[in-house]
Amino acid sequence: MNTIRCVALRACLFSLVAASFNAPAMPASRQEQPPSSTVAFFDVPDLPARVDEPKLRKSDQGFVVDCALANRSSEQLLGLRLIMLVVDHSGKLRSRITWTEESELPSYSIKAFAFHPIMKGELRSTDQFYLGLDEVIGRETIWRAIGAEKALRAYSRGQHDVTPEVRAVANKFDRFPVLTVPLLIRH
Image 1 (spheres, rainbow, N blue to C red):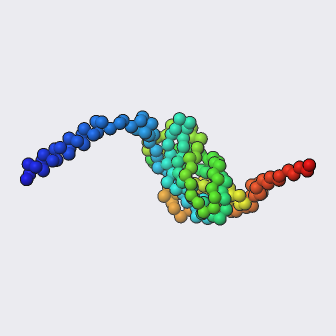
Image 2: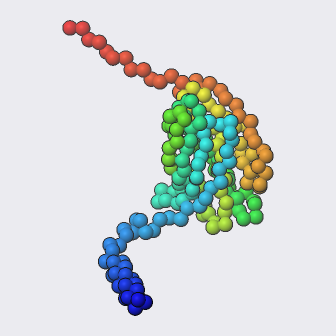
């Protein structure tokens, strides 16, 4: 009985090894994915946007933050102003990056985005990354986190009780969609 199991096991292993040699090779683009670094996101609950699972990677065009953006408001979002801190292993701030991204997102929805911070210099393998929202631009409202950078810096030091104040103002520029009026021609 044991001999039959050994023969069957050897035949199974042989067929697996043979199949692996006959399998097509993966294309180089799928084999060599650039390594990505985890980014800690500082969530301000009073802002209508939240970034989920941000990852920083280097591409041919520069750095990219791949993430999902959630809109937790009833208003369409149009854009964001983001802050990223690069902190070394001892907790010292190495770099601060701020940038604006267009990010159209319907109310109460979530969508994948690739954000493009302009980062100069090389990053170290021991660097830590912290991301926060400074401003969220909606169709009718602009939300601004007052003291967002200070709160993000405190968060990077392990102080999770510092939260920025959020102020909302009317968006006077993007509030009304452009109307097109059809031209009527009389004959």
